[in-house]
Amino acid sequence: MNYWILALTFLSVNLDFFFMLIFLLKKYKLSHVIWGYLLGNIILLIASFVVGKALAAFLPEWVLGILGILPIYMAFHDDDDDDDNQKTTNKSETISTLVTYLSVCAGCNLSIFLPVLVGETITNFLITLVFIGTLTILVVLLIKLVADMPVVSKVMEAHGEKLMKICYVLIGLYVFWDSGLISHLIALF
Image (cartoon, rainbow, N blue to C red):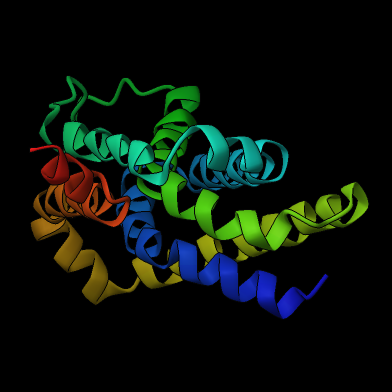
C-alpha cells in the first residue's frame, strides 16, 4: 500500500469539497462536520472496495451524474431554520454534512478510489480506512483554522450564504458535466 498515492488520491478527489467545508464549519459544530465528512469518506471507500466492480459493470459513470441534482436542490431549498431560529439537532448537522459530501463527491471518489483499492487485501483496506480517516480529521481541523481567520470570517458573514448557494449550483452542474451525463443526454437527441 503506497501511502503517498493514497494521500494524493484523497487530496485530489476532495479538493473541491475543501471550500465547502468552510461553509459547513461556519454553519455547524466542528464535531458534527468531522463526523459527517468522516462517515462520507468511509461510505465511499467501502463502496469503492466492495461494489466497485459491480458499479463499473452495471452503472455507467454518467448515471452517477444524476447525483448533481442534490447540491442544486440544496442551493434552492430554503430551510425553515435560520441562524437566529436554530432548531437543528446534532444528528441533522452530521447528516447534512454527510449528504452534502456524498452529493458533491460520490462520483469522482468512486471512480478514482476504485482502481486504487481494487486489488487490495482486506487488511490493507482496513489500514487505508484508518489512514484516510486520519487525513479527513486533520483536513477539517486545518480548514477550521483557516475559516476562523478574521478576513475569512468577515467575507463569510457578508456573503457566505450566497457564495454557498452559488458553489452548490456550480458543483451540481460540474457533476452533471464531469460524469458524462450531459454528453450522454445530448447523444440521445
